[in-house]
Every structure is written in C-alpha cells, then in structure tokens.
Image (cartoon, rainbow, N blue to C red; front, side, top):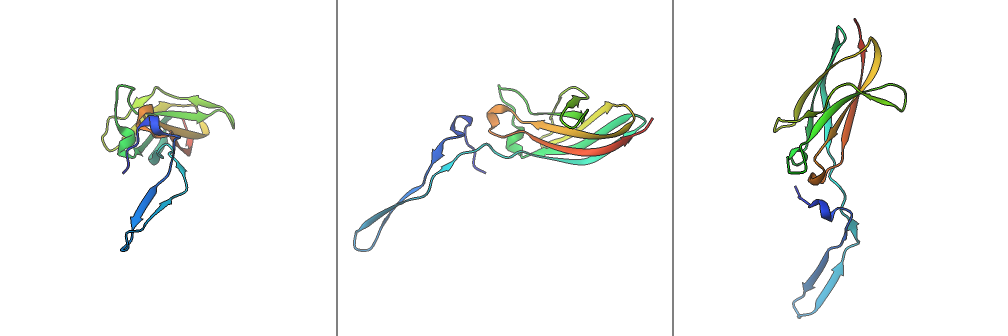
Length: 142
C-alpha cells in the first residue's frame, strides 16, 4: 500500500523514464499526468437487529491505514436514521473505533416503524482517506 501525506493530495504527478540502448543513445518518455486523490475507505455492516425498540448494528471499517490515530484525532463511526429523504437524524454519540481490525458495534433506541439506518465512518483527516457510509433498512417494533 502506498502511503501519501495529506499535503500531497490533489497534486498532479507524472512518471519520467530515461532508457539507454546498446549504442549509447538515450530516450526519455513521460507518462500522462495523474492527480493524487484521497484513499477510499470502506464500511461493511455485518449484522443489524431491532428488538423492542433497540437498534444494534455491527460492522467493519477499514482499511487499517484509515484506522490510524494521530494528534488530529481518532477514527469514529456514528449511527443516523433518515428522517425524510434528505434529512439525517443522529441517533447516538460518536463511537471511536478501538479495534485494530476496525470492528464496531452501535446501539440506539428508536421509535417503532420501518426506517433506513445509515452508519458513517469518518477516518482521521490526516490519514488521507475519505468518509464512507453504509445503510440498512430495519423494522423497529415495541
């Protein structure tokens, strides 16, 4: 895995290669430029239950480089629910991911009904990874 400092994201880079042949001639070739982009974080919901108004969602966030702690903070997940098609309601406090492998478990109380729950993973800004989210529909009963 290539580790890139946060300050290098959005820089354009190119590869320049100079080759020498048997006669001593040199040829230089330059690749087309690419822009360094943030890493892609992942989030997977492994289990989701809703029993007696209590919603429990477990999952895994990654990759391991996105889970690194720094002076800038710690990676965390948060549980939200769609209140309407565009408005999210946060159901609990932020949960810092302490597992080295990215495992987490979120619980919250919610009102009865069929709801779409969204888990959002926020790596530390200095890790060079974007946020990730995953959703699951559950029916909450009393």
